[in-house]
Amino acid sequence: MSKKAPQDNIDKFHDYDIYLPTRTVYMGSGEMSIEHGESGCDGALAERVVKNLHILDTLNADPITIIINNVGGDEYHMLAIYDAIKACRSHVKIVVMGHAMSAGSIILQAADERVMAPASRQMIHYGTWGIHAHAKTAQKWAKEGEKIDKWMESVYLERIHEKNPTFSLKKLQTMLDHDTFLTAEESVRLGLADKILGTQDE
Image (cartoon, rainbow, N blue to C red):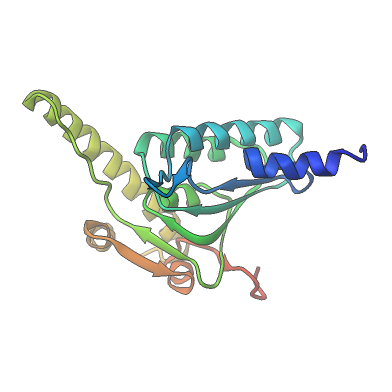
């Protein structure tokens, strides 16, 4: 490796959210500004994450780490990231720093290994849709929203059942009806995370 390579990798991590020496991808928000806050899971974020995972997974099959601090966002860009993680031949570990909320929490469930920092949080809920369209078009969007809700239920329930096999769909639906916040400890107990960063199990 050339003398310039380490600095190049640091620059890539700051500019493109990928650090090659440790095979680490950072996933925060696509855009952030004082005026508009943070965009969360948007097209810019999905493009970066999908491209970075492809780069690392193509280089070799060594483990990949994703550091996530994400407020949630667009369902379709969430689906792209989720599927990109699931498609990796490499073992993918996601470490939550800060929060993995809404779409960010769903993305967490795609990982082979789900780790939460001690003070981090998850938030789970049904997504919200705002449609300004012809009545029949709005009805079709509502049906699409229902399909995504059902898929989301299946993702959560599958991971929960790995630890709590008798946990019911009805109980999950009650949690998803309104914003439900989970600490790192609560996430592990429920089955939506595997371990807490810095503990003996980690």
